[in-house]
Image 1 (cartoon, rainbow, N blue to C red):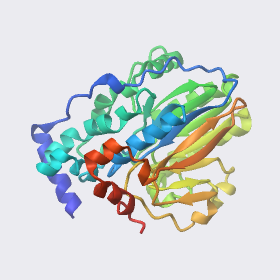
Image 2: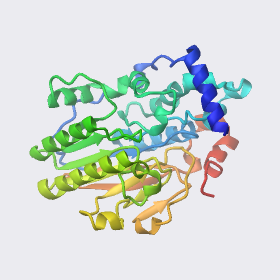
Image 3: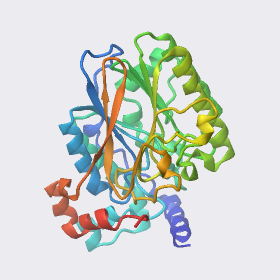
Length: 373
């Protein structure tokens, strides 16, 4: 009830003229060099996680610091930057907001800029790719608002060049995209609403897979999205929650199976949305009996309130909750990728962050930001 009232008040304030704040300074806009399709002769790293609402302003600077130590080629966020259906606790605990508590209108007007300034900016100079989550579209927010706010991250030279290489007439900005780097085709999908994947996105995805299948320099396809594809161990909080999600999600899964089996490309599938870490999410009876099990991970551990593991968690290779961290991927010259969960400790939080938010709140994020205790 509290959230419904809050959201109603938020919408009223928002529509009466608060609006979105201007796009943040482009100083942290990713500017990677042209992504090379050629496979490197030595292993290289990239990093992935999602769901940085609630305590992300505390945890993400630590993730950024660890990602830099890992010499990651980029960081990929799988969505849910801010809560938007209620206040994020980290914003409430900023000194200025303790002195003068946030109003819902001010919160909505500044939440996305807060994410860019206090989370994404800390990754510089590591390039960052942004996927869209369901909380980016909490009413009254829309995809159009999302595309405007995050245009600098959705239309970087590497993404624009790839889009035009695929189709010289494709000048439309959307929330899904792909790029080729180090012999790997990275595909970021948009399933932030119950109607996803929509037919146009599915056609684009299948065209992208067809190009990958025909490209001998691409050995691997990595697909990232917010909600896990249907029939996973995390099916209680995934695309299974709507009929269009089930139908379109199963189609995408079968497309990936076909790519793996027919074109002999390595395939890996990443998601967040569920706020825990899990390896082996598609080892379910459904996929064992309907085509096969793809390698899949859930990595919703970037700062959001932690969730309980699902009842059938024992089917996974590994599963852990009440943790923060990210997935470190090491891509090998043969196209194989090793994924390792890098867990954050409270002691990893930078001193400057502790100075801003104070030790008591940082400790709260690690001990109390949980629905699984």
